[in-house]
Amino acid sequence: MVASRARCPCLAFLLSLTTIGLTIAAFVTSNWTEGTEKVRGSVEDYTRKINGSKIQISHWKLYITFHCGYWTLCRESRIRGQAERCDSFIQRLPRAEVPKFIGAIAAECGSICLLLIGLFCQMGSCCSSQPSMHRIAALMSVTSGLVSFLGRIFFIIVLNRNVESDGDIWRPVDWWYGWSFKIGWLAFLCDMMSSIASLQAFNMTTAEIREAKRRAQVKKMEIIDLQLIACRPTVETRC
Image (cartoon, rainbow, N blue to C red; front, side):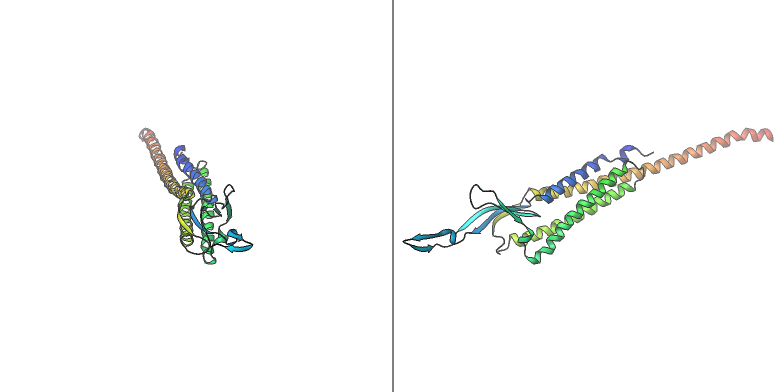
């Protein structure tokens, strides 16, 4: 019988739970990128009446903070005391960048699905003495990590092309990666550690199964030897 410690890898299970929690938290939050944006004020805001005639002053510039993620782009309100204004991020992207961004979202969703499959396999390994569950869990962890890595690279490319552009969508003065970005890559690290732990559990289970078979074979040979020894006096007496 395989030892319960090898059958139920607690470390791999906890790492998988941590990975799923961090991945979902990073995916649904909007702090992948943070920074300061340059906004142009409208001329109408600064129209003045002097002696009955309207006089317009030149455009003015305002610097506000922003943060964005997979779903929303949130900007600080121009009016002090009001809540920030959040819009759909994908609607702010140029059409040429939309397919890549959709691919990044699909990769994140696929990564979460693969993580859940691996987690269920780790739970099933506690009820089965076969090492196949550990092998599937390790494979799901590695695959989900690679898929999430590819999706985040696409997301970073889209951000760099739009945040650093001089178009009408972005006018960043300064920007940096926020805490959603950090916990997303921390989830990737936990995912790789979970795959290593699952692979180690697979090796331990396989080794214990081989050792159990070897002991059973040795015990069987010992029983045969004892039977042969017990039969020898009977044969000599008959002769």
